Amino acid sequence: MSEEENYLRAGRIAAEVLKQGEGMIREGASVLEICEELEEMIRKRGAVPAFPVNLTQNNEAAHYTASPDDNKKIVHEAVVKLDLGASVDGFLSDTALTVSLSPAYRGLVEANRALLDRALAIVRHGLPFHEFGSFIERTAKSMGYKPIENLMGHRLERFVLHAGESVPMIASPIRGQFISGKAYAVEPFLVDTSSKGFVIDGVDSNIYRLPSPPRKGLGENERGLLTWIYENYRTLPFATRWVAKEWGAGSVETIRELARKGVLQSFNVLLEASGGTVSQFEHTVYVKSDATIITTKA
Ligand SMILES: [Co+2]
Image 1 (cartoon, rainbow, N blue to C red):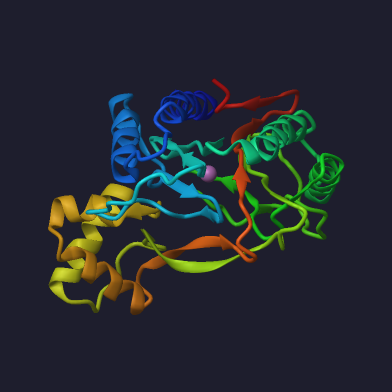
Image 2 (image 1 turned 180 degrees about the vertical axis):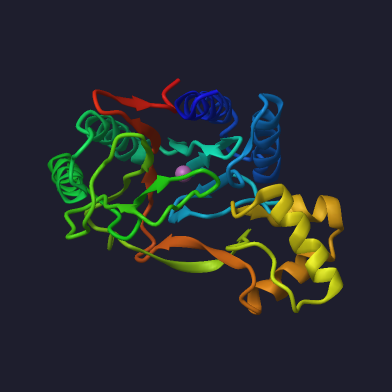
């Protein structure tokens, strides 16, 4: 399969699974069950998760997946973000949606959905990122909301979810432009204008990543674990749940220790700085010289 076909397949799988996930979001549902079921659906379709399924509520903006024995539930009137992706031979997709179980935030969510659609309509080869970011900020403000300023879209590369280049969702001096033959995740996060509009680090999110192949100089047990992680996930983010299934519950402490040593990268839950409720929509695009394909549009 060509690179484009692989991107399309990864996108289609993520779109189908996200749609299934939307139907699972209701008050009292288990976060662990939703994460596990959706990851299994990705595998059943012949791909693997590009990263652990993220499920965040209310002022949590990103980077939470269930722990191995998580008993967290979807709370009353939650605003729930579901963010997932598929990897087909390392070609990635990344897509997200928000469901508001509270009538108070349906306007925010619908504005966010429309904002992403309008933004995607202008993506083309050669479009500078700063123009794109300005467009999103201006459009969000015209709708009465504002984008989270320090969460950005990103270029995707084979086996690399965040390939160096960031795509701003606000007016920003960031250099760069959309280039044909490349894939990008576009993800405006929206809050109301009374919120601060940026995120801060919360607690550990149960998500880790090996930034480069395992080095020498570690204990045998640690090196065995890291080699297994590299063989299975390369440098893509993984969940403590996935490792615990294969290596036992004790491996979670080893992972945290490796993160403290700087061998693994850990992710924190990202929280809106003023406790504001956050919405998110995301699609992956594959830019061609004459067209832009939204790979994750069902
Ligand atoms: Co995403």
